[in-house]
Length: 112
Image (cartoon, rainbow, N blue to C red; front, side, top):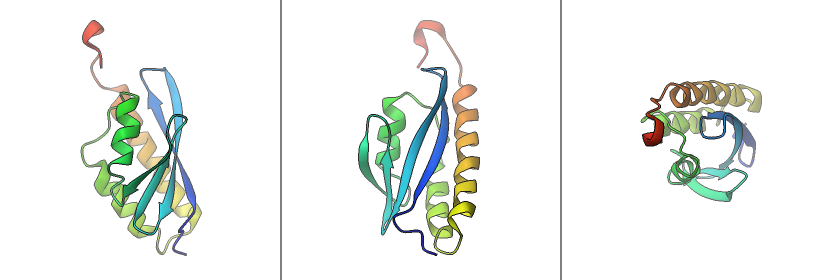
């Protein structure tokens, strides 16, 4: 069950657009490929770097500093877990990222 080539959905809220966006992460031999509406397949390592930073940075999404460690843990867990079990991890991760995004300060003109 190593899930190589499987795609997983990461649903994240965007303050910039006021709705949830879907990110697709495909498990590769050495990391993740990240796909968004604007990015059609940036490569990242097990931590998702640099692809996840590029995807979130381009949309001004705030995310937890240690996100990469969780992506790496999910990659490792996906070696023995079913696709459905791995997707549940991504569902939780999306909630955590969305909470971070939703609770960032809004300083009007300085809003990021």
